[in-house]
Length: 184
Image (tube, rainbow, N blue to C red):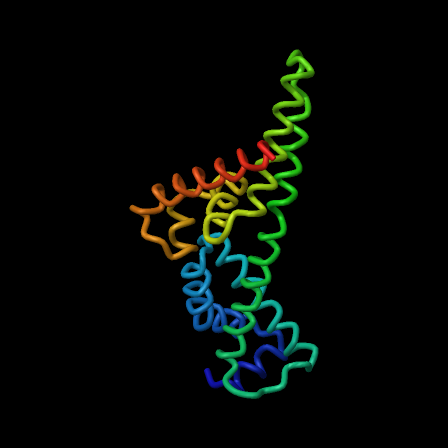
């Protein structure tokens, strides 16, 4: 199917045009999402959302051909995935807040223990703020986002075999910084 035939098919709301788009354009988007820390489910969602965005833009007459339609569809897919990643990065703060609330209900622990625990927790947060990269990212991904080590290795482009050692070393740095905060 030529690009002109495909665009005409989309205008006619031809299901064969959508099938053609899915068959010919989806693999590129799938590959991009999988290479950039996405799962198969993420990729399928991005593919469908991207194809629908393009479909709607052509239907509304807002698509202006500035090159090959395939390149445009793939760029919409890439941007859709990058937007999803940005949104995922904002969510850890919500998850952290939930954990803080869970810590608040500790029942029979006496007041002195609670005060000491919260001082330690505050010191950890201050120390985390002072911790440099890549340690800060590794600690946040592993402990707060609870991301599996294999995914962290892939995302941060670190060899899986050395990742445990790096996280261990980062924890030591964080502990030392936290002790410095408590001591001051």
